[in-house]
Amino acid sequence: MTEESNERNKPFSRSVVIILAVVATTTIVTYSGVLRTNEPPSSLRQQQGRQLQQLLDPRTVEMKLLEEKQHNNLNSQTIITSGVRSYTQNTIEETARHFKGQTVPRILVFDGETFQFFNLQHKSISYPRVYNDRAMKAVPLLVGALKNIAPDRFKKNAPPFQLVYADGDSVQSDCFQDECNTNQFAPLLAFGSVPRDKTIFSNLQVFPVKAYIFSCLYDWKMNEEKYPSCTNWLEQLEYDQEVDFHSLTPQIIWRGANHGFLMDQTQFRKSNRVFFMSKDSAYFGEDSNDSKESTYERFMKLKQLRWDEVTPRWRGVLLTVEEELRRQEEPLSSSKSLPWINVKFPKSKDDKRLDAFLERGFPVTGDTIEADAQSRYKYLIDFGGGGGTTWRGTLTKLKMPGLLFHHSTPFVDWFYEDYLQDRVNCLFVNWDLSNLKEQYDWAESHPEEAKRIAEQGTKLATYLFSSAYMSKLYDNLFVNYLKEVVNAYKEDETMENSNWESMKSQYEQNGFQLTQITTCDDFDCVTDMGEGWKPKFTYISKKRS
Image 1 (cartoon, one colour):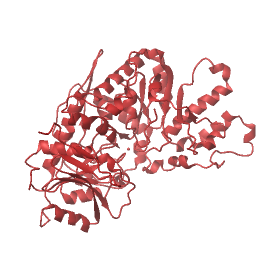
Image 2 (tube, one colour; image 1 turned 60 degrees about the vertical axis):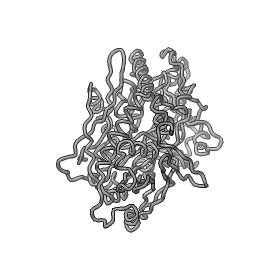
Image 3 (cartoon, one colour; image 1 turned 180 degrees about the vertical axis):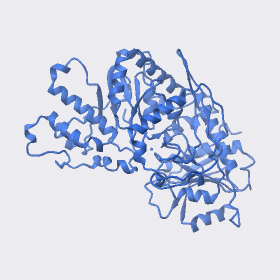
Image 4 (cartoon, one colour; image 1 turned 90 degrees about the vertical axis):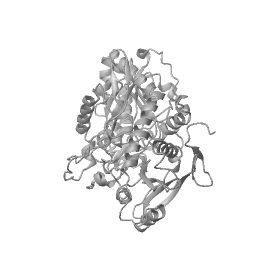
């Protein structure tokens, strides 16, 4: 199965974060998630300009992983008040000015009659294409939740209400490079990947990504919470769970798109250019003497020259090519075993970007291997993409009989930090793959422990697709957290008229352009997808009388 193409110095505050505890025993793992957050800091320290490069240093990531492992060893946790800070329309405007790229700020508005959903784009910021389809089921989920938790607050003629929402692949903001006092930001519901370092955005709350909302959570809620649907997902995950782990093919397997990695981040702009490579021999470090070198020698020159520039997916591919070419040079020493890694881009007649490699004898492409075939491999890896994670890949591969090598990057999805544990239900791999071979060697030399970890990963994935998990997730995010957001919203005292028309006028006067995406009535929400397509989804989770 091909990975999704679209897949994100001094701390000055502590943040709101959901912790879903993992309780492990020696014979069985049970999972219990709860909401855990921190109090607002008593004083704000002077924030120094952060460079994302520091976050991406392998030593920094390794240190954070050790801290997370200690944190996750807690046996029980309790729900703590989230402490969402109060916010107004002025706060929303200040928040929206600092987000860019795919993180198009959006606002869900109750105008005194019904709910509407808008893009909130500042005229001074250039935004890429906005994907309205991501709102089709997320907005009805939010509207239904808000009406259930605060029916009097959202009855007819009640005061207006607004919350800020984003659903890009990952959070993109100038606050990665510049000083931002995010304690002055409005709470932001992020339906995508978010920074692992919670001190960057103290206002941010991670929600599930589109794939999980669409395939699982929405259908579960609309079916009276009786069972999860996950139809489009689980149909692909009917693997033979009775297979003997030790009989699986002992390779790290991956097939996926030649897609970028954290493309909006300054540090990776150069490495992401690899997609647009020409056949320029200078890139390959070639000279007139190369004809005397073997293919393996020429490749190793390229690898040494470009290794620090390329993305994690490309690093995996280069490691595979190195292993295969080395074996061609030394056929007798390696004929009895498979290469330890099998990471390649699928063959494609339409993608000409890899031709320069293939023409030089560097096998960077391989046959397509669908999910069912991948499930017969012992080791799988979930490379992060443009947002720093892979939306479907992690859960899909976690559920397979093999062992997940989890690509731990500076960005996380909603369940990563709460449940994934190194050498408990997966193996963590540094973002730059600096410990990939080490983790492989460990798994090969500890086969029974590797089997146990793989089994716990499958159990975890099964739980994350269950009604029990969805119920807990919904209560934590769409009930407990949303209550805090509703209570935190305040009318702007500087406005003469606290009605939606005057609020909309203020946005326009301050340089914002509002584009309506979704309109809700008493039962359904309709999203304008353009070209006359306006899909309708209900937010009533029971049959209408």
